[in-house]
Image 1 (cartoon, helix red, strand yellow):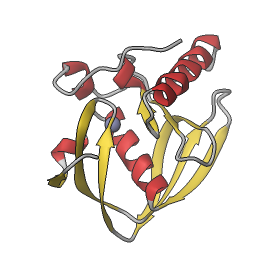
Image 2 (image 1 turned 180 degrees about the horizontal axis):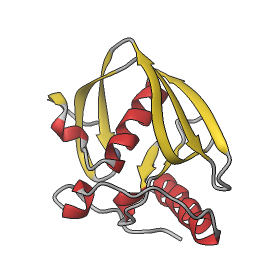
Image 3 (image 1 turned 60 degrees about the horizontal axis):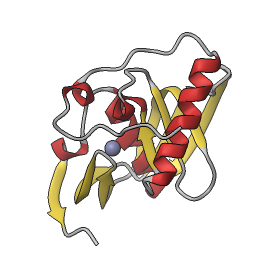
Image 4 (image 1 turned 120 degrees about the vertical axis):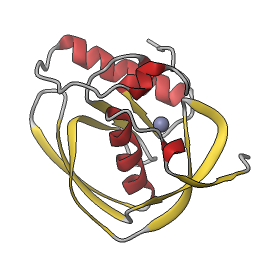
Length: 150
Ligand code: ZN
């Protein structure tokens, strides 16, 4: 089911999300809905607060398959990159943000099983951008320079 994506300015996007403790059907439905919503909007990442759910849940797909992250935590990062990013909650805009080039994270999958991921370049940016959402941080806070959106 497609869910409505909240836009920048909505105070919900500034809330800190709660840890997920129950890995149930409702969580599975949320993940499926988020993935469908993200795909329809042509995005590569979506965090639960963007659909109004204040839980630490993220979906990402940078073209290499679906990644589901519950309670994600960055365990290591290094390097630097300065690339433009956008957000489904702020359509029509992109801005350059400083991010680490490499990011390692740990999380849980939809069944509560611990998982680990490594990301570089675009995937590293996606991990950072989406985890920021879970803490009420929006990329506009970090933009060095706004760029034209094509
Ligand atoms: Zn975003």
